[in-house]
Amino acid sequence: MNAVSVGEADAVPEDEATARQVDAAVHAAALRPFDLAREPAFRATLVRAADDDHVLVLAMHHIVSDGWSLDVLVRDLAELYRARREGRDADLPELPLDYADYALWQRAADQGPALDHWTSRLAGLTPLDLPTDRPRPDTPAGHGAVHTVTLP
Image 1 (cartoon, rainbow, N blue to C red):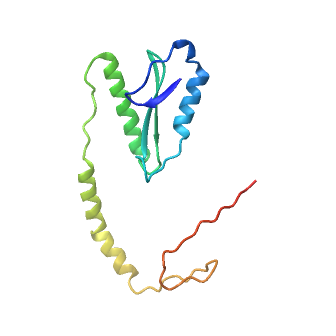
Image 2 (cartoon, one colour; image 1 turned 180 degrees about the vertical axis):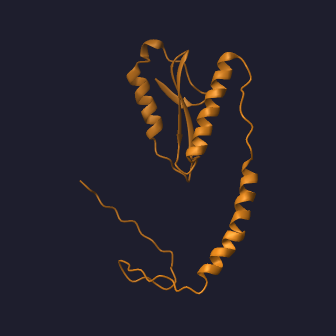
Image 3 (cartoon, rainbow, N blue to C red; image 1 turned 135 degrees about the vertical axis):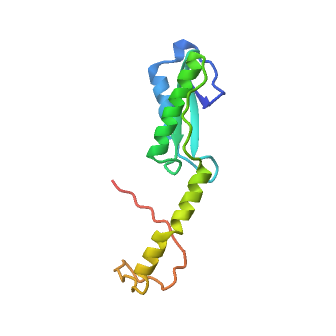
């Protein structure tokens, strides 16, 4: 059983392609942790069980998408797959806006009347003095630490 990057799958004799091997390869691809300092936060792995039997595993870090985006990805990928199998062009819906449009809209929303409203409403309020587990400096230094704890 081979689990490889998309486009590099090697043929595996059908007698070796058991459901258990496919399951193990899929789980290994899906459970491999992300090293965000060294690799993209999205991976595609093609598991080839036989010449005409494949499983595509898409693994992504949670920072890559939200529920809406994931629905779009699954819908578009399914349509692309159907179109390829049927020998036709994919019928993908036009996006109502692209990311650049969204970014401009978000920037404008952050600087519009809502920001002015809350800035004026909160002006002059004393910050909350909430209890903490230990004294905090007036100016955070940004220092941190790692504490490892093993739980049974």
